[in-house]
Length: 290
Ligand code: MN
Image (cartoon, rainbow, N blue to C red; front, side, top):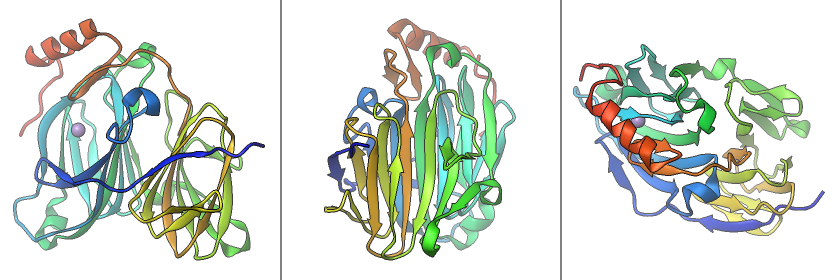
């Protein structure tokens, strides 16, 4: 098996606020392009940040999405979500919220009310996963994936474990259902542990260093909060934990269709984008109270 080489390691850039509740570093398309990272078309990373106590939960008010899925992975803090198709819920540490916007939803994303009252350290990832053209106008769907329900595979020698959010790891299936082949893992490695991952060569593959530092492919430093992007030139790569680490591993088959994106809509053509704006403006995304 050939080694997948590292294309680049990106440090977290200057953060910006999404609404008033998410202080994020953008890694996709920031470090690259939607097309290059296909099917992962957006990644905002809220590195650890302390939010003060408040009675007025911070977050993002009602806004639309069409044409893709939003995946939120909570590492610290609690988030509440509500959408116009009736989906909703609260996720906390280790939980995942997989929302298929598809034909269109309105939703809002806020820190959970009770958590907000004490505030504290907040850390999360929001990823947008593109949908194949044939699924872009399918009905919205919501998957609440509690950490307890995520399949976990223990690594040999007490080296740690792999939480299989989506796809497959060593024949263990992920909890989320996806529209195109995607592997998404939270990998927890103990200090000194070394392991290897293998995915089809043409899959778009990247790592986010959520906690701790690692060496990738033997000699490349991947410090905490950095993003590692691989070339599609080999199947496998290795990771060695320099301290206790949590690594988000992403690998997905490119959808390879045209991308027309504007704000909260990601479609295939300019006409479909215009239609999305018209449908949103004429209330076809439903209703959600502020
Ligand atoms: Mn959103």
